[in-house]
Image (cartoon, rainbow, N blue to C red; front, side, top):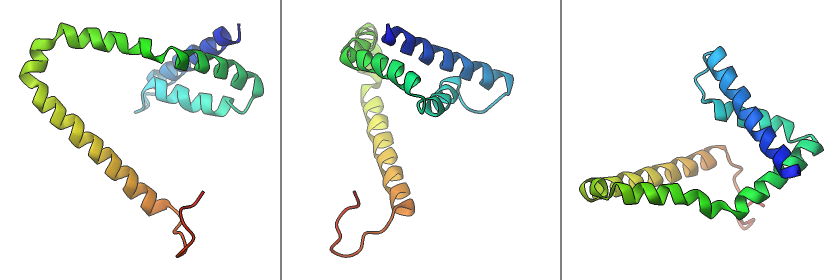
Length: 121
């Protein structure tokens, strides 16, 4: 029952995020606003327990979420044959760009370790 309550929390916060995004004409997607709202509510033990139970269930069955992607790939093999190399290049370059941006942000904002101190924990 906790898992269903957790799913209800997640769906309610996503819906509230969508309503806020549209009503206030915010430049952020509704699910992102819902996640920010969830972050604030996770301080409450009841919400944390319910959402945690739901998250454990979803993580146990995560592989099922890849079935629609696999079906989509199989349904559009012709497009993959035509644009597959381009898609691979774009995915590779965007992944490298994301990792480089992450390194840059961490170096720009992180604490510098003293010589011989090792990595911060």
